[in-house]
Length: 438
Image (cartoon, rainbow, N blue to C red; front, side):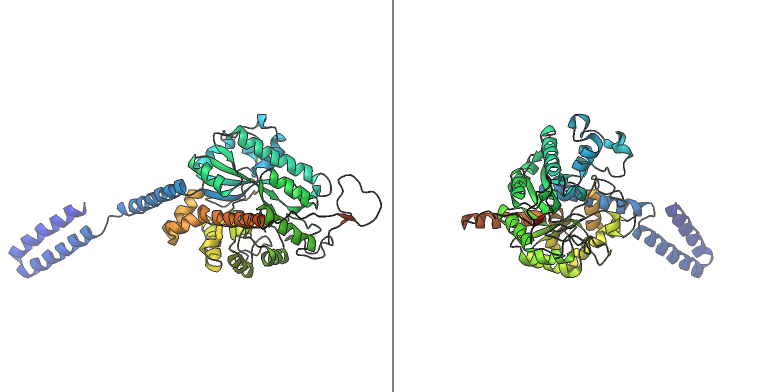
């Protein structure tokens, strides 16, 4: 259309030259300038297509990266939903189905995970949470944790064509080569131990590879982020027994997870541990002042420790509100990258344990979109994306394994904890709060 107008304009100019030479020459010059400008600039209809094409190219780069490097998520609460919805009876659970069409999953705001969406999200490794509520800590917490570990193991066995239970960095890499989702176990909360290092060792033998020191309750030996006024933990950080827990975690090669802990517990752990730590699902306190998030001075300690903070997608940790955007999640990622460094940030969405997800990150299928946005809009390099996706966690896990191996060579023995009753009266079955753990 524009070409026709310009050509018509030039013909008019030529005619004007014959009639009024000066005016005609001016019109010719104007016509050529307009034509050159039109040729130089893309049409309005082409501009959006050009942007879309660039984003599609970046998306393909991300897909190639995730075929090379496993995308590792630090925390998913699907096992608790399996307990809640089908009482751990896997015969009533079809993980291969689109659970957005299957009740009660489809009606729950807490459900964001199934195999089709994990595959679409190109998840390479997932830490499944063996979680039990704090209310069980003086009752059947140890037993319930064992049942949750059991259901994770059975889930991986039942869906062995897609999942592979692993316990090491080598296992993650091998599963990724086989195009399976490496499935790891994390125990969420020190209350699951029943104040016993023997139980910790049993959890490790069953495949657990990190322990979150607290959940939303203090223990006798560690303070949580929301329990600083609790009389149960007079230390607010780690007690002497809590330091023994750290020592045994280091010896076993289990990662220390500081999500949910108090700032004092974070500081104590970072000052005492000889292996890198993780925050399996936390965000930056400077951007959202939730007690579940990590202050800047702790982020700097994490960098010195060579640990990692894995960013959650829970809106109340992102925006301190019930809604959040992908750009706000990226702000947390960039903040941790800027304060702690690009080697110390990862992903730990917390799916199936959150009921307010980020817009654009509604379920486990959306990780590639997040990484694409980081590359397209925030100038992240391929190497930085590889670190965020999985290489940072692999480095941390490798160093934890290295400490374990070195201690084993040095002949380090298990901590033989002795539980001393505070009084001589017989204790109720499964009751552990009558022991002196200080």
